[in-house]
Image 1: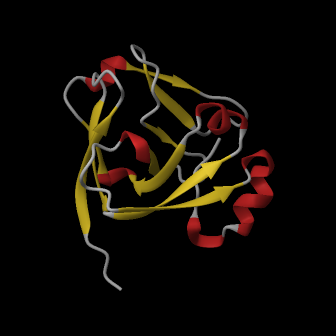
Image 2 (image 1 turned 180 degrees about the horizontal axis):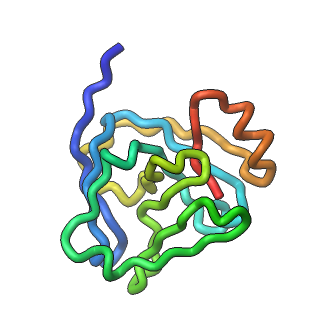
Length: 135
């Protein structure tokens, strides 16, 4: 089955961080219970890094938080605090896009799967090729 990619535009709440990403209009998003995702209620889908582009002067409004293995780079807006994307541990060459931060109109369907981030290593192995992104 061929999946057609579309350009999605999105960003943070205050719109100082804006990006575009090339991804399908139907995605699988991961709802994680790791300490970070759970507290932020972050549900995201993964795209290859070369499908993601930060727009304008967005970089100057970003800060990064790491914890645990320090592999994941949790980016957030310095002004409004929203994490609209981050660089996941599971896919170091990918970007995790917070699906609720995609501007309306281009995401047609979001299938939400659960990921047990409290038990990251064993859960990651069990997901096979789905490759969720977490801490």
